[in-house]
Length: 158
Length: 132
Image 1 (tube, each protein chain N blue to C red):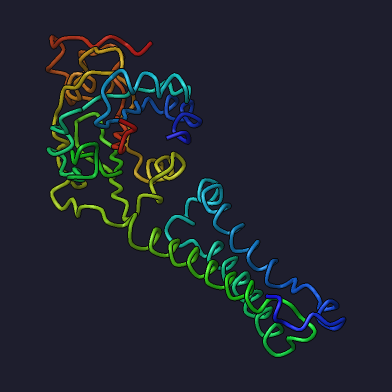
Image 2: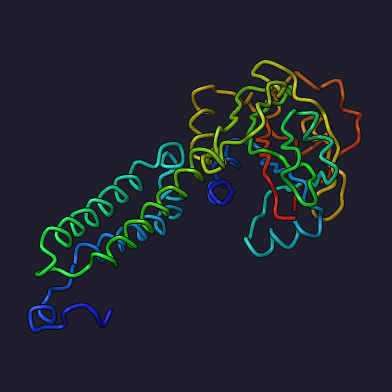
């Protein structure tokens, strides 16, 4: 960039704070997503808080870019701002892909037991290797039989 | 899963057992439970047979293209009947303990302990050791 005029005016150009602030806000939005969902499970369905943070961040970057291009003599950041915008959009794009497409690629499970139907019986080993069956668990013959069972199916950690 | 551990006293008070099922083999589950300090029941279904029986298999999503369970929660009463079910549409939005307890209280599911007529004819059936 030595060809750029390096006069005193150039040196005095101000840092384009909104660009960096905006990029920080976007990255902050991505980082805080999981703790946010953990605290507010409804955010898993529609992460509006994270989307709002992303919106603010992108607007800041956009604002900084406007300064950079309209008043290039006063503000820096035409190149950095463009990079920040591309990076910000990429982060938001990946987030949207992840939360609205990728994690929703689940099988329809239309044959799963419905309310009022009998839950299919099963016998499986627990973590100590003991066989546990649903019917025996619920059987009145089991001295510790519960009033019901909450079955949680999870992906596992392999 | 952590929310269920935290709410275990509330499930205990209602005499409800929490049972988690995945394709993880027992040793992985044991390690996981030890690290996370989970004390409720975890069952292993490495071949996803029960998971398929419940039509919850996410084929090809596991190790080496195997099947894993998609997240789902069922509330089963003492007669073995499904009383509440949650099939999430998103991996990040699964049911928390508070949701299940809320659904439970709305349903008034559990028969009073010991008063369940269902299954009383099976008194001779094999006994399952109580949870440690």
